[in-house]
Image 1 (tube, rainbow over the protein chains, first blue to last red):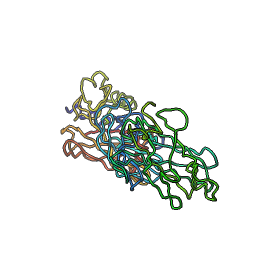
Image 2 (tube, rainbow over the protein chains, first blue to last red):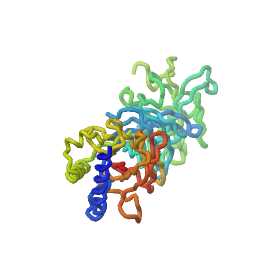
Image 3 (cartoon, helix red, strand yellow):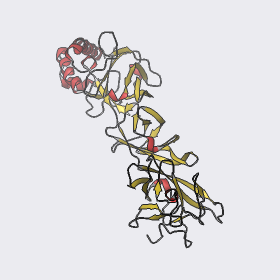
Image 4 (tube, rainbow over the protein chains, first blue to last red):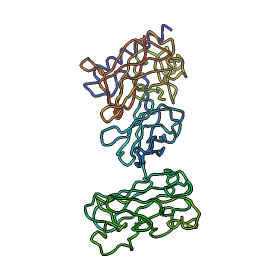
Length: 284
Length: 142
């Protein structure tokens, strides 16, 4: 044992000499060369939003983040993750992760997340933020962009006779001129929480946008499918044929959207009664 | 969790030490002074750490100003025999360059007495971006 101690002391003495010159020579870590440790999980993790909730009524978001550790990362590890908007933290979460795990967060809007940072056992864990929105909006005529947000709502609508699941969709734009729009639904998105086999315009979702009252008996806020029947479902607003020639025909034309005229429509989900799958049918 | 493994620099240095000590590498291996090795199982950490008992290294990190920053390095699964001995530790960046943990003091490493609690001890370090830390180096000696 005395021999061991002597060896250790000799080692440190030499290491000390190395240390003295390390900074000047730029010899990495020469001062305390011994055993080294690096992060236990090399590679890049993936963070995705999970746990659909309404951040505010009618404003969908998420309340969790799924963290998938790099392949080959064995065992369970304490992980911290923070979702960023620019340099600011939107939400943070922490917990043990083995392979893939969901960590709860406070509610946040996934579309506002610009990046994510994380640690594993306190070591930096490179992480990729992965978010595919359940629905996107495209401007098809005119300049500018648009956005689509989808809220899930279950219940019995005014005038309805039974409970159903609805996709309540807002279409917005910052364009100050009218633009036409389409909304593309990723019907395979986990956000929807169900396998979508049918979608129909809800004729009971009367909607007052401040200027126009959309009802089944007047201007309607209906949409129709554009293109192929697919799980990547594209819809656009119906051009309203019941109102024409008026000064405000654009206002009543549901296929148009402007910054001061967001559009709202509601699709009833997976009802098989006739008339409730006019957008996406069970045969699709 | 991260476990200590011998560095190549250590290997080169250790050979020098062994040469000075008049010992051969073979005899060093027989001395079984190592511990905390992850892969090769031949690195020397401390004579107090049994071979095969790997020291786990983690960082204490918290989010601050757009990034995670580390304020301590924690060594766990340390053998009780190491308690009361002297440690020296150094953090390296991603390219292997030492991170100055000492501020104005000489050298870039930190040292102190191993004081174990539950087989672990922590060393406070200046707040350092976690992403800038690539390796932790430790040696324990009498």
